[in-house]
Image 1 (cartoon, rainbow, N blue to C red):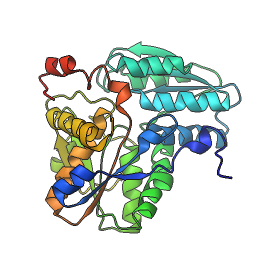
Image 2: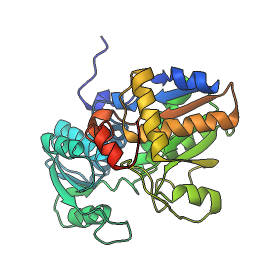
Image 3: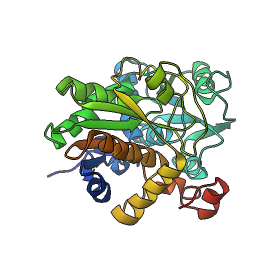
Image 4: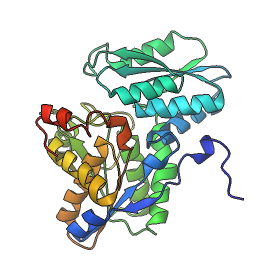
Length: 323
């Protein structure tokens, strides 16, 4: 009998989906790792599980303890689910700019949610730094610290990367993904490069992030801004340190919106904004590499967490974006 033992055992082993319209458009196989099918609804379930189980193995998290994290939403949702399943409390520090859907979901899951102003990382009141201070002041608690905690990228090295390699039978030519913490991009890149150094690993970056500039020039510089949530960065995180990067592709918001509506209307996939960046960059990479290649990216989460924004024509118009 194929029965999963609760929420925890259901994380991972997501399918690869061939994106038909984009594959036909490029002459390449454009494949999306369906991370929105994780039980908590996003790719972040993997990192959340590994972070908590790593803390348990090290004796840092004891029964009845609290997991504290600063998150743009999805890691917090994954942590809250797993805390419920394992009997821990969850405290989330989140920028007030994040979608109401994600904030409401966290509260529904029973997490304590504290909203803070959205300020740059260098500011001591940045949500990541606030969460670290809060955790340090609490007894029987851990700071998940997803940006620096290597359990994050280890989750993707051991599971996501290995699954992609097996699912494609080793026939993968390119891997492209946006980075927030860097865990997904780095873990998968490191695994694929260990199997075949010729796999092209490319960072997808929204406007307003400094990583595209870093890859191209060695200097972190950002320009513009983006409506996407939870991706892009102005620094190299612990999870990104040492990760193989062959190139970077920058995708603007208009292309992101075009892609997510093509996914919806032609593929039947209702996706979040970072998926628009990822698939847009996968298409760009496919056009660079030419027909006949297999490009894999990640379908991070579903569109329901962004419905009031990305799928609201009035909101898009207020940002100067057309459907």
